[in-house]
Image: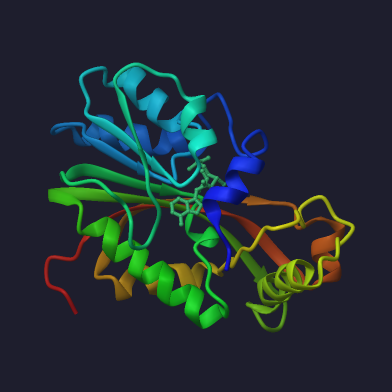
Amino acid sequence: MFSPGEFFDTHSERYSYANPLKHDVFFVDFMKKNGSGHSLLDIGGGGGAFAKYCKSIFPDADICVVDPSKELLQKQNAHGIKRVVGSLPDDINVASAYHYIAMKVVLHHVVGTSIRESKDLVKKSILAAKSKLDDGGYVFIREIYYESYLIPTFTRTIIFYLLRLQNRLKLKIPHDDFISGLEVCFYTRDEIESMIRECNLEIVESLHDEYDPGAGGRVMLLKRRGTASYILRPRAIPS
Ligand SMILES: C[S@@+](CC[C@H](N)C(=O)[O-])C[C@H]1O[C@@H](n2cnc3c(N)ncnc32)[C@H](O)[C@@H]1O
C-alpha cells in the first residue's frame, strides 16, 4: 500500500517550491475578489508555498496546512501558519471549518489498488474536504490531467500499472518521472469534472494550462497533458 508520508519525506526536495505559480495567483485573485474572512485549509500543502503566499496577502487570515509528510511541513517555518500531520481521505485531523479549502496537485496521489478504487478514494477525499467548509465556502482543486488518442484514459492506465509493477518487482523504469516507490492515478478532465459533480460541487471558475506531452508521452499515445484548476462551491440543490 502506498504510504504518502514515507514517500514524500524521502523526496521532500523534489516536491517543494518557493515562488507562487500561475494557478496560485488565480486562486488568490478569487479570494481577493470574493472577500469574507480569509480562512484557508491547504490539504497536501506540502512545503507551504501557497500558504505563505496567502499569508503575505491576507496577514490576518487563519491558515492551516495539512500534509502526511513531516519533512515537508518542517520546511515552511512561517509564522502564523498552523501545521498538522494528516492525510486524505480519513485523517484530515482538523476540527474547525474553513472558508477556502485547497487540494492542489494532491488527489492523483490518493491511490488504491485499482483505478476504480483510486476514484472512490478521490471522491471520499473531496467529500471529506467539503465537510470542513464553512457556509458559503469554496474548494480549490488543481489536478494534473492526461488525455490520450483513441481511448482518453489509455496513457494514465499504463502509467498507473507500470508504477505498481515497478514497485512490486523492485525494477527501475529508466525515466526520471518513474520514481521508485511512487504511485499515481492521473485522470482526464472529463473524469475529474464528473467526480466533482458526483460530490455535489459546481464549478465557479476554471483555468486550464497545457504542456508538451513529450516524446515519452507520445509513445504512450498521449494527446494532451496539463493542469486544470477549479474553484468550486457546494451545489445549492444537490442532484
Ligand atoms: C505534488 S505535491 C503538491 C504540493 C502543493 N499542494 C503544491 O501545490 O505544490 C503533493 C503533496 O500532496 C501530499 N499528499 C500526498 N498524499 C496525500 C494524502 N493522501 N493526503 C494529503 N496530502 C497528500 C504530499 O505530501 C505533497 O505535499
